[in-house]
Amino acid sequence: MPDPNPYDALLQQDTAQRVRVNMMGAVDAQPDTEAKLQALARRYAMPVDAVRLRQPEIEKQARLDALDYDTLAREYPRTAARLADPQQAAIAHDDVDNMSAIERAVGTVVGYVMGSRENSLWGDVGAGGYRASRGMSGATRAA
Image (cartoon, rainbow, N blue to C red; front, side):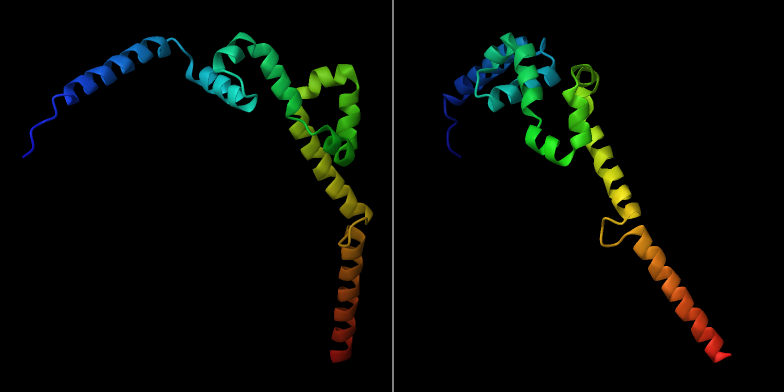
């Protein structure tokens, strides 16, 4: 069996000391906050401490950068119109995803009912009536 390396003990002590020093600073930190700061630092290519010093400003910028304004205006015009009003934007800026999802769902339902889609309510009703009449005529012929 080979002799143990005399430097292994020193390396382990050094590692243990680094862990202890790092933990002394880390136990006061809020893990979720630190994760958010690190993510913002990566996103904006900034040191974590710079983000920490300007956290409200950087978070605001991240919220503004999260929206695709052109897509919002083109695909969700009612949501965009609501957000174009400063008072409405102040109330609804944190609900853009829900508002656009509702607009998309309502548009799909309205399109189905009003017949702007290939498979529309009126097309389905007409097809059902046609099939029912064919079934009735077949039943009368068989009798």
